[in-house]
Amino acid sequence: MITQHLITELTMDKETNVVDVSDFDVIQRARSGDTSAFVRLYREHAGHLYATCLRMLANAVQAQELAQMSIVKAWQMLASFRGESPFSAWLHRIAVNTVLDHLRAEKRLVERVEFTDAMEDYDVDEGSVPIEEMLDLEAAIASLPVRARTVLVLHDIEGYRHEEIAAMAGIAVGTSKAQLHRARTLLKERLER
Image (cartoon, rainbow, N blue to C red; front, side):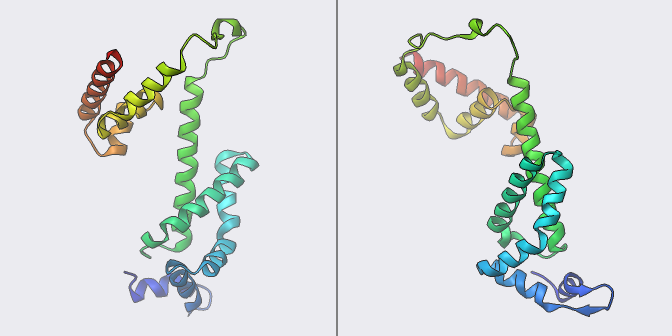
């Protein structure tokens, strides 16, 4: 809960030492679902969020997109704002995390892409993998236990390392490795049926 001291700190005009309660009121109204209050907060902070994204990405289109994503995340997470820091700092952190997530995903994608001029080496005959087998694989993955399936998808499909998976899932690195082994074993058994 926001203490009176923090309310004062959040809403005090540093130049005049006058408390502007309207900022706190707008945040509270937005937290209670008032979209017009959130729109007001958005208008006050959108330029700064965009500038932060632009500095980190050096790409105006991506910066605009990720600034918008940050605003959506802020709206979705507004109930978690505790007022322990200024609202602008809270929004800034969301924007920075959104950009960092985007950059990590982009890095994983680039690491998996192989550039070549010999495209014929990668041509796949349309009929080489029957659709039934592809559907069987999807069904087999979907039938795995949740933790095993999660680790399999994150490691083998999305390309995360065990350390990253462990941090995301709140498990030990060894547990991630064990779950991957379990998932692969179960998947192999289910596909051989």
